[in-house]
Amino acid sequence: MSVTTEITDTTVKNGRRGRLFYDADCAWCAALAEQVRGLLWRRRIALEPLQSAGVSAALGIPAEDVLKEMKFLTKAGEVFGGAEAAASAEERMGREQG
Figure 1 (cartoon, helix red, strand yellow):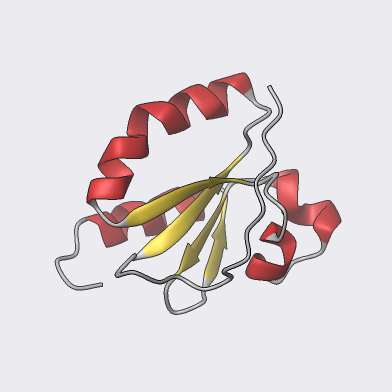
Figure 2 (cartoon, one colour):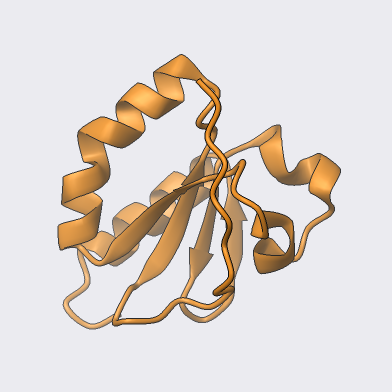
């Protein structure tokens, strides 16, 4: 499966606590993303493919590093990768104010 989406907004808006980026070409990653999509949305975290156009710029990392690991972009502009991305997203899910 190949997913291409263009990201024109590089900020976190609309009351979102952050943006969690996953590898849409990884079957396991995509299946897990679909399982948690609703929960993340209710907790005000956007879920987006790493393959989306504009992700490199949004995250401030070189294009060749985008697919190395999942990423989490906080509304404060912090970027976390891998296990830290998951932990940071989970931490913000529990916050009433974020």
